[in-house]
Length: 551
Figure 1 (cartoon, rainbow, N blue to C red):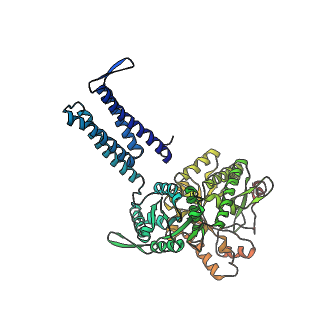
Figure 2 (cartoon, helix red, strand yellow):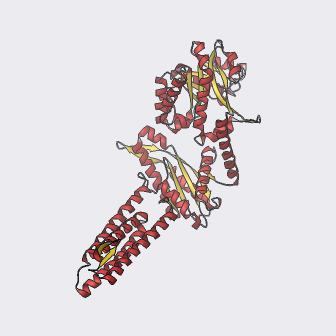
């Protein structure tokens, strides 16, 4: 039986209350029928009534203490009521008869009453600390979950919302956690000032907040006022010098009508809506609806399919060759994952990778790709006897997590794979999510001879100052910047600037998506180092990819 469950608490409270009352009644029964100096024979042992009553009173006090632990609010009221009854029951006979034999019991009542008050205050403060966020002083995630799950059945109207703050991680990374905490406190105050008594505000984790709102007609308009307030300029002070900070917000909303009176489902829907808002280019607010519901069902099915694919080997790898642009020699391969079901149906990576990235499944996929690539190409790269690169993509969740670099090094040792032949590709988005762990992992990888490439370069997730500090070996120019390079001088100038900046950083540069000779010629003129694309080679399975290798 779990004490944390409300129903179980109620049952335990009732049992202990009954036991407390029974012990009290037995004390009075013994005194009334046998007298204070009477002797009872129990299991062959002679016990004075006072001794037996002392034992019963001790049990009663123990029951009252446990009652406080189970429910400190109701427990204090019940305990004091019972003790008051017992106190008066002991005090009146002493006053009327002048006999003070029950004085110890009366004093014990007073002492236990004081103990109950102290215990009540301790549990109240402990619960407050447990349910309060240390930085902002708001109720925390545990309080939010309890409130939604336990109170939703009383709702006639309302919604829950998750608020995600963008830009907070950059404050932590550039100014430090003290200033990050100040931002969280300022945002918390702005939210509470806007909602007033119309909603309860909670601080979840990281840079996320939550709301429980009741009886608001236009939830989107209400939430928009919160976003407007959050996104106003924040002024911090370092050494008395003002620093302007800007953050933005995305909000996911779930109306209680979609919760089916189930708080867990309602919170899940709000989380799904927030993910939709974060992925949207146009809208910062997303309200869970039937269309999103259908998308969520599809996502759950895809998650199930990914798990099945990992268990039953539906995944396989293809390798896209990369070439030195000047002499068409092979640099190596980028590793790409594919999924094929037993009936021959192909599932697009664009579908299952996106779903996997929203869960921990992407971690399992990343590990599968790295292991499979090492397993298939280990002997080839060793036989090549030269710099031969196998490049694998990893998710933002992986490169931004503590211990990732150590995990890669362990895999290199496990497969006895030449570290200098392995390249880890990360995206600009990875850096914007967690620059501290990302930078640490990159440094450890490179110290151990593993190359690091920055993929999708030019998509604009990171600042120039961050990029200049990143110790990467290779910049990959995103395909979207290459597509119109034949027809746009602006595109050519932009790509030329990227190549120049890459070389300035001490990096090689590779262009993705080169599909014809004209694009190839332009990239050569712009002094790009490497290319990959259909012009010289398409992705293919391991056996066919070997045809590119000169071994």
